Image (cartoon, rainbow, N blue to C red; front, side, top):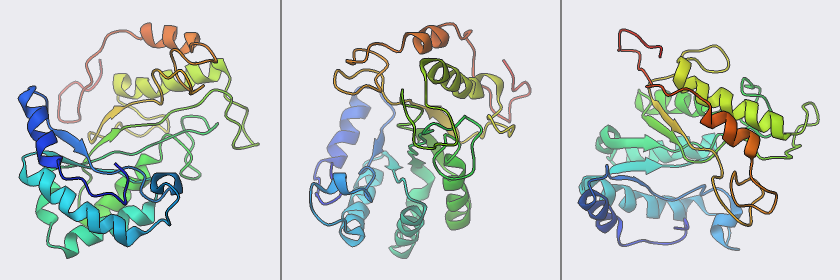
Amino acid sequence: MRPYQVYDHWAQDVAFLRSLGLPPYLQVYNEPNLPPEWDGQTVDQAIYLSHLIPAVREVYEAGGFVGLQHIDLDWTRTMLQTLKAEGMDYVFDRLFFVPHPYGANHPPDFTADLNGVLSFLEYARVFEEEIGFVPVMIAGEGGWRLGETADVNYPPITEELHRDYHVAVFDWFRNGQLSNGDPLPDYLFAFCPWLISDAFDPAAWYDSASGNRQLTIAAVEAIPEFERRFSWQADNLP
């Protein structure tokens, strides 16, 4: 769903998820500040917000969990301020956020800017400042792409780094500690790397023209089974 489009079936989608016995987590819109999401039209924050408000209201009133998504801190802050100005702070009790923490070719402990997998921490700060708490976060995209060379100060992403860096992220949930040494926040529920399978995207772990990310796949398969623990549990380690 593009940010310039109006969608009339949010409530129907919530009902469909509930009919399947699934928690009705529903993200409304995606990366609205990026030109590709506007299909050649001018990026217009006001238009996006005019569509976001009724979408959020419809998902919430249908009993769904409202998923917000941004990759820009200022747009995130403006979105939250707009919801408050519209008197919609009541939706915050069923809110979740979908960060896209890509790592570029930075290591997992990189925090110098937003081009790192720990960038969700900066979005958490915005939520804390604007609404007083950090909602559940589910990283809907993120991780590393094979061959990435965005920062000349760091090596390109090789098969070995792709493996090691992704395993480091999954170990957050196993060991209860982020790569920068901080405790794993309770609000971070999941990290979904881009991309599991796609014939046309070389970043795909399976089925792409560049072949499978076999080193990464084998390393993830080798991670021992574990149960993620939260801070309120007596034993927060596996």
